Image 1 (cartoon, rainbow, N blue to C red):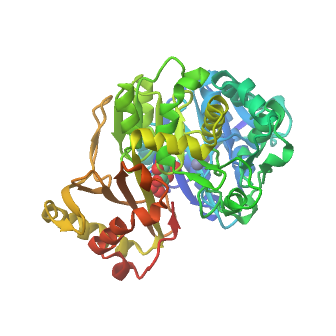
Image 2 (cartoon, protein in one colour; image 1 turned 135 degrees about the horizontal axis):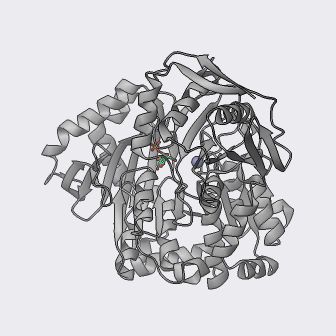
Length: 543
Ligand code: G1P
Ligand code: ZN
């Protein structure tokens, strides 16, 4: 084996976020670009010589090429072994599962999550530590520091690995184990959920439709729903991962998963529908002609967790991101367990889970999960719902309506304005920040402002403080409007408006969320001057 050191110059890139580095494929293809980032990871994580890594991705364009590059660099950087998903495939939650199960030093996941793929699409890379979760801030800071001073990267000259062939191969002195990407994950799911009950539900004629959106969950869904649970093959659609995700936008929401939504709202609709995103960590849950808001989904999962074998012994606590509705807080209160409100992003949940403070966590952005891994987990949420339906023998809609009758309904919606010019977005946020001190006590229609702030969070585990996490306008009845800039977009700025109103009156629970929130939406537009400042008269995506 020949180790080569290649001279390079700092790529001086943006600091990787909690979801790693995301950029256009063309940026990653620039000479030394991917290599620089990978070397920056290796220089930052101080892996011992015996270390094992996990490596895989969501199958998007450039996935396999990147894996070959990373394997040669891992060999040159002294790793003993790399576990690689067959054909380069590993969903994000499956990678987290494999890191934990085999107690590896960490893992590299290649994905830009729900962002479109293909030669003109996005690519991404992130490092997860030995707890299976996204790298800590200390590691991402170190990677960023190296990126500004890097002068060389190391690689070996070796032939490419056959990614399709299960079993052991070698790159230089390093062992490469090509593993089945599904088995470990599917076994974990079988250990948590009542597969026999779900199998009986499906055998009894309950019809499901799962949309893998041409992304990574296809093979997982086929193995779990079809092979292990006995659903017909046709119940998994768009099941083959494609490098460009079939030119779609693999984000399971009402806009981008419209193919599935049309089926669930059509004639002869199945009883249950679900979709997941590019890398398999998000989920959307639908009943027949019914949409389950992700904030409600978290609350319902918590309220019904005692019906699921893996959670029968109770929950330590629940965590939700700040913009997620307070529906879960009501359940936590009833269960007598703590509910934590964290900034947006999964890393805050990881700390709480590692410390044993929470079992379940979720975000309004179609992310739900538990301490079984350290990432959010799309198929886990789908199985959780199927287990609940199998145990309660009710429709999805009836389960949700009963929940609202018991706890009240936190009517909720998110409006996204995507790809707006950055100055316009920053202008809106500045206007709100400058103006919010004067708002408390002011009345807008039937709402009176109670307090406003720019959300900040002190981590109860490590004491770290995160500021500037979103502007909250909270009204005296607990209703809220939150404004936040997205941290994950790659084009212009995305402004998110989160709207929430509490409705205890059962007779109004069937109202459509947009109708129920119309007054709050009007107030949000008035306060933010959003239309005049961005020239947009409607959101790009409404959830
Ligand atoms: C979005 C979601 C957030 C999620 C993140 C990664 O981030 O809103 O909840 O954790 O993707 O999946 P944002 O674009 O809002 O910064
Ligand atoms: Zn994702």
